[in-house]
Length: 230
Image 1: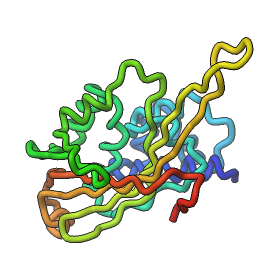
Image 2 (image 1 turned 90 degrees about the vertical axis):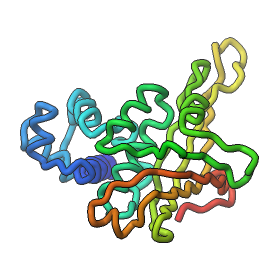
Image 3 (image 1 turned 180 degrees about the vertical axis):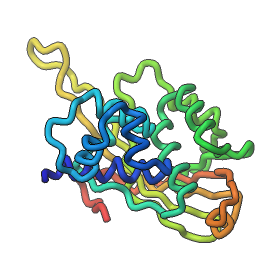
C-alpha cells in the first residue's frame, strides 16, 4: 500500500463521514462498483480511473488536489459533525467567488451571521463583512487561486474554535532566456483562524444550529523557515 493510496482512502472516508455517506451510497453516486470503492477506501486500489476520482471529488464537494495531497495527513478536526462540515465547506469554497458563496450558503444550514466580521490580529484596523471578504478573494487577474489545507481544529472555549490552516500562494517568476515565463514559485504560510460561534458548543453537540459570528486571523509565519508543523 503506497502513501498515496492510503492518504486517498483516508481523505475520502473523512469526507464521507462528514456527509453521513456510506460506501454503497458513494458507489451509486459516482457510478462505480462497490468493489472499486472498497479498494479505494482501503488503499489497495491500483490505477484508479481519473474519471472516478473526479466523480468522487464532485460528490464529496472537494477538489481533486485535496484528495491527492500526500504531503500532509488528513486534518484532525473537532469530531462534532456539524462544525467539521462547516469548516471544510467554508475553506473549500473561500476563493471561488459567487460560486463558492452559493455552496457555502447551501451546505445544509445557514452558516454566516448577518453581523459577521473578519478581523486581522496583526492589523486591527482592517475589518470586513462577508460580502467584502468574498469580493476581495475574487481576483480575475490572479493566475493561480490560493489553496488552503486544514491542519487541525480545536475547541478552545464554549463558543470558540481555533483552526490551523496552511495558505499556499503561487506566482510565475520572471522569464529567463527564451522561456515564455519563469518557474512557478509557491509560498506557504501557517495561519491561525479563530472562529467565534453564536451558540455554546455543548448545545451544538446536541444538534442545535449555529452561525459563524466572527473570524480573527493571525499569520504565524512562512513555512520553510523556523515554523514547525505540529
